[in-house]
Length: 304
Image (cartoon, rainbow, N blue to C red; front, side):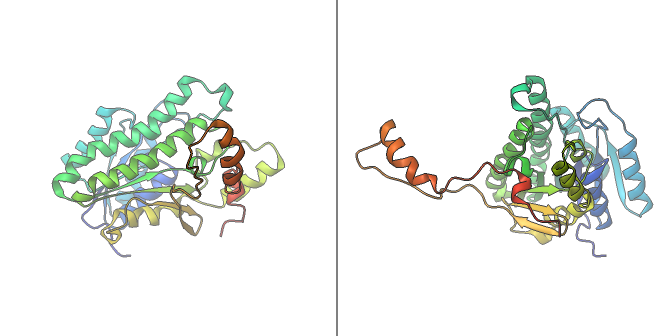
C-alpha cells in the first residue's frame, strides 16, 4: 500500500463510527497521524461516550499507525481549537481537516422547532466553520493544508423532512468555496464530498412503505468505507490543484457535481413590471425549471 499521507497530521471529526471511522482508518493506513474526534453522542446529538473513538484509535495502533482520541464538540469554538491544539501538542503540526461530524433531527417543516434547527445547523455548519477556522492560521503559516467537508444530497437535490439538515449542508458548500477562494494564496485547498452510504444517521430514514423499504435496502449495500479513498486522496499532495469542487460517492461511483450558474435569461429593454414578468418572463423561463426531485429520483439506478 502506498503512503500518500506519509508525514501528514489529520483531524477527522465524527470519526468514532461510520464514514468518519472509515476515513480515519484509511488515512492512517496511508501514513497519516490522526486525531480521532468523536463526542460519542446519539444520532440526535445527545449524550457522550468516548468508547467508539477509543476503539478506532486502538484499531489504528494495532495496524501500526498513530492516532489520539479527542472528545470535544465541533459545535464549540473552544472545543474546535482544542482539537487543533491536540494535534500540535502531539505531533507539532496539522495538515488536513475532514469535517464529518453530524447529527439528524428530521421532521416535516411545519413541525420543525427552533431548537432542532439550531442544533443541526450548529453541528454541521457552525461545527465545520469552527474546526476549519481553528486550523486556518496554521495552514496559512505553513503555506499548505487541505479541507474536506461533508455535504449531502439532501441539500444538493432534496429530501422530505430535512429542512434543517439540508440548509446546513448547503451552507457548507458556500463555506467551502469561500475558504478555497480566500486561502488559495496560501496553497490551501477546500472541497466538499456528498456521501451516499449506510450509517447510523441514514439508519434513521423511515422504512414504512414498500418504496421506502426498497430504498433502504439499496442504501444498505453502500458501506461507509467507500467514501474513504476519495477523502484520503483530497487530503494528500496528489490532489494539488483540486479545490473548490463538489464530489459525490455512491458505492463504487464518484461524481463531480455542477455548481450554480445562470442557465437562461430574458430581457425587456423597457424594464419589467409584475404583469410583464407573469406574461413574458415566466413562460420563457419555465421550460428550464427543475422539478421538485428528491435524491432518490435523481439517483434512480442501483448502486454500481
